Image: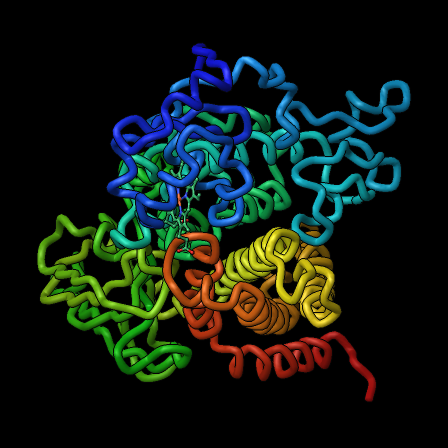
Length: 545
Ligand code: HEM
């Protein structure tokens, strides 16, 4: 914005028919906007011609300026200091104190030699993982820092300002999913190495051969800073659980035919397992697939419920019954919408509004046998393997949402005053923050350890040995999220009871809590499994009691 004004220029626009104000040295013309201002026009007229920064920040958060700046800002005051480099995010993170040769070799350096990375972000303790604040980490290096800067910039400029609007509309523009493909993100979110052979544009900031599971974790984590389960599930929900079985167990011809379209963001895929009468009890699902007499097709009939992204999906990775009762009669089929006989309708749910939760019916859908994923009647194992990846995704999202609740609370507690003091100066508020932080950090450290184990173990070993801990951490993460959403809501008071505005993120996340605590294995099932599975495997491996 190149135009500059003096304080007295602004002061002459102090009436309803020409209403200018100053916020942080920038000049805004609110003449037309005043009638649409949700806080009312009189309140704006009272500060017309003046510096209203203090009043503005009392009632709004940063998102409002980002959203309206282009439309309303007409220039800046001549007294505004020339912009210094923005405080965050740091554009090109470097080592804090690089040793000779260390910077270049950082990505490959053994963990114990790694230096702390430069601080990044707002530096609010616990609002980001500690390695963002210059703490040492054996897991993260410069390629992670580069990805972090890339994703955060995109989220802060292109995504966050629109999140509330998309949530209310219950839809994210299709263009955003396409952009996920264009940026190469989808090819790195499959719990595997980076799928570089299937994408036109690999990720800008990380060479494919350097990609590891910590990049994947970081990408999901930064997407979750939007504070919207609906957004995260829209862009990676169906994909992150529907696509890995195809990549890991699909026939090469099938993968070669459909994977490029998915990873480049042109086609969408989802996972269809849950049924009206079979949630966590996957072994008892009833959607049937009968082999045709000529052995070339399966004919699929049945219903699926609570399927994320189903209304927009081109492909459905679907659990079907091909054999007798129980887990040994279950297979996985890749059903294509184009086959016909697939109907989808949106379900109205408590949370994750923009994720497109769907009810699906399959009526005499003819599916070629080439679309079988894995072996007939051995789909249960594929589903179980996939659950670990799904649950890790849920854990990452829940812990970041907990951080968002914490961050929003800290910022608000530092500006809101009650009984003559800022909220942060009341011990009872600090106690709430402390209980949030201790749970977030303990859970996150367990998460890092599990990601590291996944990185080191093979698929089958990870399924067996990590199934228990991942289930336990999933429960831990959803309980932490529920706690943080509740406490943040208490700190925000009425502002988190109404939608939008300063408490908007907290209100939305509070609504999203159950979408994390129930699917992917409910807390009760997870806690039980965490012990059962861990004991079973330990016994196999020689546990002595
Ligand atoms: C660029 C200038 C401004 C814009 C774009 C703007 C925009 C908005 C928006 C979108 C809301 C709805 C709530 C939200 O989403 O946060 C709102 C609420 C409000 N605004 Fe503004 N506003 C501006 C300036 C001001 C100023 C200068 C004041 C005070 C002098 C003010 C006072 C309020 C109040 C009291 C509310 C209601 C807050 C609540 O519901 O708790 N606004 N504004």
